[in-house]
Each structure stands twice: as structure tokens, then as C-alpha cells.
Image (tube, rainbow, N blue to C red; front, side, top):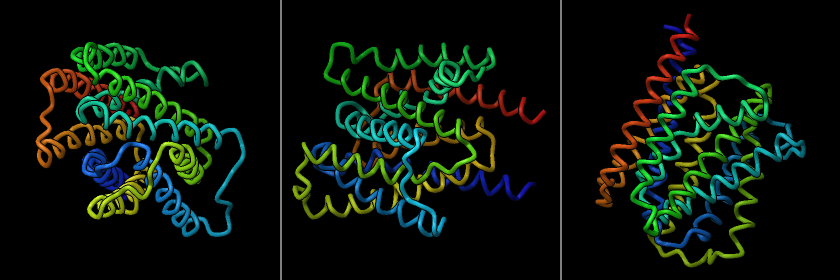
Length: 283
């Protein structure tokens, strides 16, 4: 077996598994969204800056070209929407809805950079939209609807970021996370109470922002350079499967029947689509 491929597969898998703890830790930190986002952005920015300084000594940490600006703004919006969605609906709903972001990316790539997708991709998009609609069906007349819509917008913002970064794939866009983290902190500061955290909240916050987020995103940035995009999409489903299970196990938040049914449809569709694309790329 190709050792470079195996390394990419294992690094990406480990990064996604580590990221699966994100939603659980957000729920464990007992503060409102903006206070959490302030520290999340600030600490992520610091840790990614240290990584970039180690990985690319002598290179600038901040870039002002349009690709970097777009990547920064899209990741900033996706981060704010993700944390807000976790606080406004179930973790299962959030992760199932966001899991369709590779298919959102196909639509965005077709519109903005003229990247054509195979008919099987458009079929997968249609089926996944049905699954997401089924997940959201119980939220139309409940407060959860706001959180579900935030998750949907989060998935679209993430898809936009990935398309933007792929359009300049000769560059490493990791430094854009530094600017994004700082921007998240500045925006959140207007509605945050950063010192409102209690003793245990500080511990969970440090675990999330100093260890979980930086390590996961660094691994997810490095790993996919060695494996195909279809395989990356399949591996990202590990978070969709593991995230709700962790919250269910530790916090007893049981996914709704609609989330399980719709999530199964989306995950199976993405797995089949990823497998077909992987076979085509192999041939």
C-alpha cells in the first residue's frame, strides 16, 4: 500500500475524530454563544499562528489578497453560525445538516468557478436535500427552527470556503484561520462577557480551543493533500456519526427520530456518492 496515501487517510481520520468532540465541549461550557466565540476565536488564532510560524518560518502570517479575505470572512461566518446553532437546536440536527456541505460546494463551484459536476452528484444533492428537509420537519413550529437554519447557512459558508480555497489550491490557506480567529473575537466582544466563565468552564474551554480545534484543523488541512476529495468527504461523515453519539452518551441528549432517519439518508447517499467518485478517480 502507498505509505503517503495511508498517512493521508490516517491523518484525516484522526483529525475528524478529534473534531467530533467539538459539539460536546460547546454544550459542556455553560456560557452564552458570544463569550464562547470570543475565546474560541482568540485561542484558535494564537495556536494556528504558532503552527504557521513553526511550519513556514519567515513567511508572513497575514495576507491581504482577495482569496485570503474571502476565506477569512466565510470561515468567520461559519464559526459564528456553528456555535449559535449548537445552542439553538440539537447536535444531531446541526451535524446532519452541515454534513451536506460537500454537495453545497458542488453547486457553488458550478456557479462561481464553472466547475462541472457529474450527474450522480446532482442526484446525490437532490436526495440529500430531501433528507435535510426531513430532519428539519419537526422544527417548523418550534424554537429549533432558528438553529436548523443557522446550521444550513453554516454548511453553505463552509462549502464556499472550501471552493474558494480549492480555486487557489497552489497555496496553503491555513494562515487565513489566524485572521478569522481574530475577527471572530472582535465581533463577539460586543455581545460577550469573556470573564463570566466558571472554573470548570475554563478547563473545557482550554481543552476545546488549545487542543481539540487546532489539532483537528491542522490534521484536516494536511491529510487531504494525500487522498482524493471523495474520500475526504466520506471521512468527514465520521463527525456526523460520532458527534451526536458523544453528546447522547455524556449528556443524554437523544437524537429525534427525524434526525436519525434523515441523517441515515444523507450519510448513505454521501457514502454511495463518495464510493462512486472514488472508483472513477481510481480508474
